Length: 290
Image 1 (tube, rainbow, N blue to C red):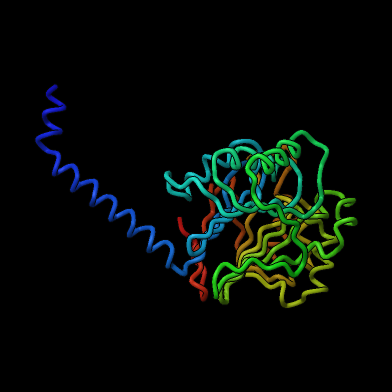
Image 2 (cartoon, rainbow, N blue to C red):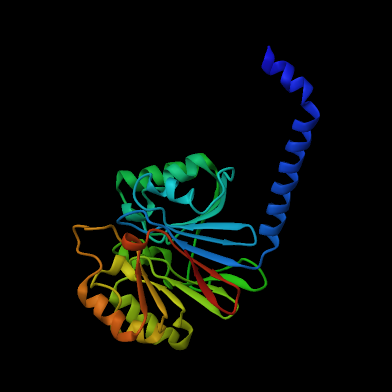
């Protein structure tokens, strides 16, 4: 009864307080929507990939790691009240890239899902496919040249695969990885999934200077099957990010890959050692947010 009496006595103060909180929240949302900053966060999901992209209120998750780890890491880069993600991009159907997506689709409202068209007969992929149907989101197969326009100054451009669906569907999963440039003004992030050296070499010859990037996500978690010397030379990244679990059984990142990156003069960052690795771009420069 004392609590009820106190609330009645202070009802105007409480209402003013709630109103101020609402105004602050609304102001924060307006600022977030209008900000031209591009944020790219390489999440720490253990042995797997998960990359969160945000620009002018648009939120995209590229890969979802394995299992439910991605949910807690999303909490580090999204406000607790936010229960929507505009788009999920599955680079390829391996469990350490799509395993967390069913839980994301269950917990968040998702509008679009993009895949390479390469599928798997595993239970993990079946759970992902069923979750897409249950969510009822729009489902698209991306190809080279497909562009997601985030704003006048920012977009995501897919560079690979560049073949027909019937061919890509027959490829080994890693080879089918979606490869994309995230471009904001003069800044570029290059995301490569688990693409092997053969695909990297092909892209280096095909795109030349267009493959240049400021931040490169090392292919296949730093495996020696990726990060070919010719590809690193074509992309000339200032920073290379390795998304891999600590003391993983694959030995990622491979020492040869580390040596190649260091020989290039690029900074090497790993999610194992650093946790989530977050960058912000204003279109002219990229800064790391720690």
